[in-house]
Length: 356
Image (cartoon, rainbow, N blue to C red; front, side, top):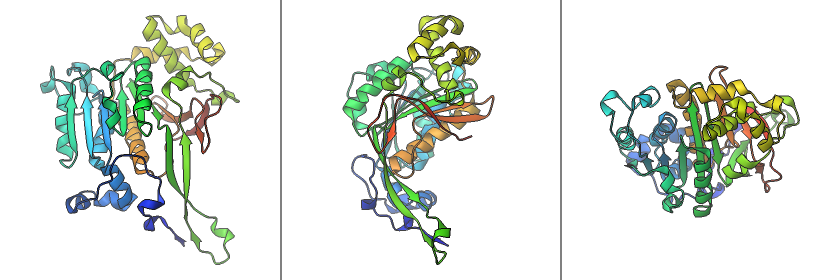
C-alpha cells in the first residue's frame, strides 16, 4: 500500500504562483468548494481563491474556460469585449441567445457567469483588445486569457504583459470549425509533482510518495512565432502549427495558401513537402466559425491548465495544444525552446505527447 505525503502539504512546502495576498477560506466557501478541496487540497483552493483573471474576447473558447474558472472559485474574473452579439456567435458561445443579438458580448457573458458563482467578483468592459497592448491595465491580473485576435496583436500584448507582470500567466487561443489551439506563456513557472516510488524495490512492500519541486522556463509568443521549425523525425514535424501559421499569413496578405507556401517555408526554415496546404485552406474556410463541441474540448483543456498553473500542482502543458476534431486528436508541442529547470536554449520544436 502507498502512503502519500500530499495530504500533509502545507503552504511552505509548495512554491506557489505569485498571485497576490492569499486569502483564508470562510465557512461558506469551505462548503461551496468542498468537493474540489477534497480533490486538490485546501492550500491549492486558497491559491485559486486569490487569483485574478482577465478574459479578452467573449467567444465560445474563452467562455468555456471562464465558466470552469468561475465554478472553481477564482477571486475575480473580468470579461473584456467591444463587439456586440451576432448570429455567428450563437453556434459556439452557449451563454448567448437570439434575445442577446445587438447587445455587448462582454456584458451578456459577465451577467451569465456571475449567476454560476456569486462568490466570484465578475465584471466586464467594452474596451478594444488593441488598446490593451500599450496600457498598464493588465498588470493587476495573474492570468490573461486572450482569444480570437490576430497573432501580431497577441504577441505584442504578451510582450507588454511580460514587462508589466514577470510572474503573470498568459494564454492565447482560438477555434475555427473543426480546429482549435492555445499557447501558454507562464514565463518562469514553479510547480510540485508527486513522485511515486518503485514498490518492488522496497523490501517490506510499502512505499511512500514524495514531492518534487520543478521549474519550467517558457518562451514568449514572439519567440515562438519567430523560431525556425526543427524536427529530428518526420513524425515530429508540427503539421498543425505550420498550417496555422500559413493560414495566418494568408489572412494578413489576402492570398491563398498555395500562393503563400514559399513565404512560410522561408520564414520557418521548412521544406515545402512539410506544409499541409489542404489543412491551412480548411482553417481559412472556417475562420469565423465556432462549433460548441470543439470549444468545449479545447476550452476544457485550457480551463484545467489555468487551474493547474495557479494551484501550483502538477506539470502544465508546455506550451502549445492543438485539436483536430476530424481525427479526434489532440497534441502538445513544445515550441520556441522552452526548458525544464534551466534557461531556454536555441529555439526548437518537439512533439511532447498525444493526449486525446
